[in-house]
Image (cartoon, rainbow, N blue to C red; front, side, top):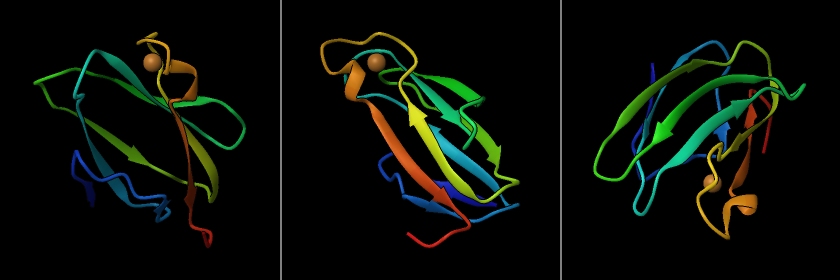
Length: 90
Ligand SMILES: [Cu+2]
């Protein structure tokens, strides 16, 4: 198992290991969506202030995945995206 504390978002993850994301928010509601290298949504959970949700993901294929906000949250919404690499060098 690979545990991701709520204030830490690494950009590299291993393949074929259970990963637990702690998901919360400091301001308003957001959506936490994980997309595989082909652009398919593979996991999602809501990010809410003062509450922690846990999202378990196992990346079975190496490649570049994307985490995006899935809920309109304000003027910065379109920029809420992060690329993560799985099983490949940074
Ligand atoms: Cu948003």
